Image 1 (cartoon, helix red, strand yellow):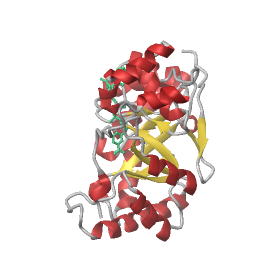
Image 2 (cartoon, rainbow, N blue to C red; image 1 turned 135 degrees about the vertical axis):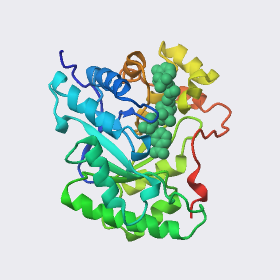
Image 3 (spheres, rainbow, N blue to C red; image 1 turned 30 degrees about the vertical axis):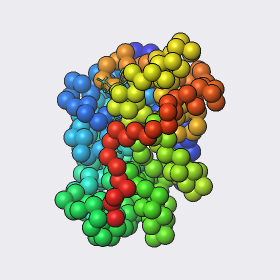
Image 4 (cartoon, helix red, strand yellow; image 1 turned 135 degrees about the horizontal axis):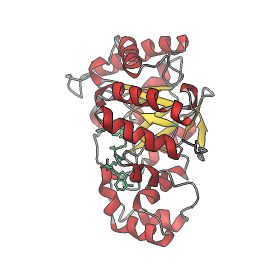
Length: 291
Ligand SMILES: NC(=O)c1ccc[n+]([C@@H]2O[C@H](COP(=O)([O-])OP(=O)(O)OC[C@H]3O[C@@H](n4cnc5c(N)ncnc54)[C@H](OP(=O)(O)O)[C@@H]3O)[C@@H](O)[C@H]2O)c1
């Protein structure tokens, strides 16, 4: 199989690590056959980044698929970027062991990026003041792991500006990435600004509104103007402001479609159109109540 040249942009994180701006999301992608099909299509068209998490229960299948398919494309571990995340159940001093468990599942020597998945501990109330302590303990444990080289970059997910400010006050390794829900209907202007100011890369999840935004009238209008699909327009909207994306798709056709986003640009007016009437819509969980 011929290796397709990966034509895509990357971002240099605040610790010098290079990360592809577009990766394959794998939430709800499960089972060995499904992972092999998705990873095969992704590698073939140029994806070099994969986003998983302990709670997706697919780290083993993803690791196996990569192990099997990298040689087919003449690639090795260092050519790809793997992100995983700390389960909210493991928030606290056990973070280091949880990360090592993910590494074992994936069959990897190191992770390119490890994120704290959620600012609160599973089983605790959102307003429980101990959540902050558990986050701090996790981060300290992960900093130690980072210094061993088992994790090349550290980041957080679903943190608000307040959680981030607390983290910056106490950390010695600042977060390199913030992964949050972000799309034209939840633009996260405050967090985008905060990240720019503090040297943190913002990576969007649910860029397609979990599939819902693909049928949105304004999105379809802009797609028609460019002769593109809704999905390509939504991904382009993020990419052209330097926001990373990790769309999830199951079929090879969709996976390839989502990668063809490098050769067109939305105008300022088109980006404005995508806002719709400006009403915010969140498709996933809201972390603002987590103490
Ligand atoms: N950190 C967090 O808390 C968090 C939360 C949510 C997600 N994430 C990460 O972000 C990734 C993406 O988010 P998401 O999975 O919530 O949603 P998403 O990427 O916004 O949307 C995925 C949905 O869109 C459909 N789809 C994808 N490409 C398509 C195309 N070209 N045409 C038509 N339909 C298409 C998929 O269908 P099929 O699958 O049926 O093809 C799936 O139903 C996740 O997989 C995960 O890795 C992280």
